[in-house]
View: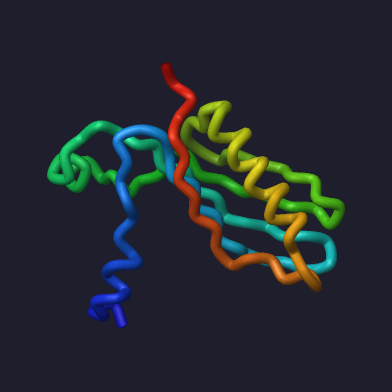
Length: 119
């Protein structure tokens, strides 16, 4: 299955020169809410060759994100640095997701790109 052209196209993440990519993967969900594995990738102005050599697919930060039954969001960073603007973005993404949940069915995966709030 790994040799599939479609799988290769989907599995190769986009690289950005700035901003960040947020990846959330559902670990568990139920009446009490949802628990996501969270990974954040910061963009960098590097060539594809440099990015591949330097391990660009290594997240700048990773941790857990939870949505409680009432829509409250908790983000815990286990390792790395999560800029404030990216934490706020992730919080808003999860709150929006919580409002759109029907019958306790949370999305299995959320991936979003966002420009940074830099100068």
